[in-house]
Image (cartoon, rainbow, N blue to C red; front, side, top):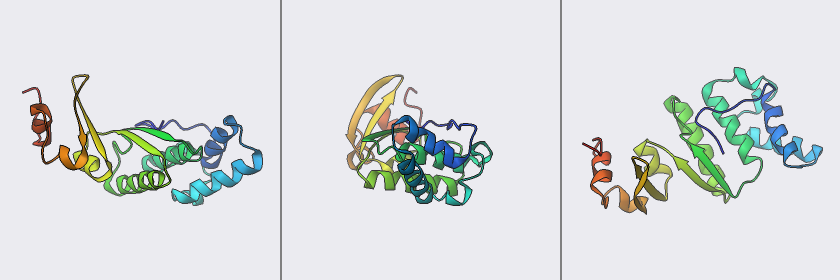
Length: 161
């Protein structure tokens, strides 16, 4: 699970990744190799020794993704992974999500960003007021929403108006 506001341990970026691998029972040598590989994959190899809490918001989000990715999950849950990021950091995070997905991990992500849902999604589950209103493939959801609430949301209107 990667949260909207990533939780950073009071240690280096590298140690943040290594710690998760330690908890998963990965051998010490394998931890270091895997942690360094994943930091390189998310573009953080050059800040591996820096305290995680001093990294920028985008770097912290990439670190949180690296920490989860290093564990090789079958499913990765992402809660608004690009909220409060500038466009460049958003692009970096979306690229990493694509890499994780390409490696075979199923991504389940919440987002209010329609463009992001179109770019990254396969299937849309549209929720309104705590209930599932619609479930549809992304290529059908946007051009032909089945519910009035979804259609209103896509048009930029509040669905309950």
